[in-house]
Image (cartoon, rainbow, N blue to C red; front, top):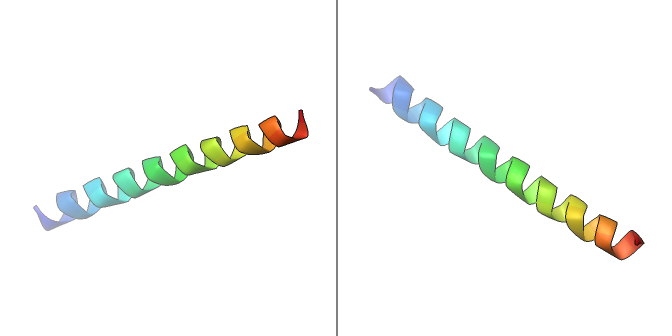
Length: 33
């Protein structure tokens, strides 16, 4: 149970990082163009 909880937190953290990275890339593309 503890391992599953840890994995769930890790996946959510990874998704949040990917989401913010994509948002920042969109902002940079918008500023460049």
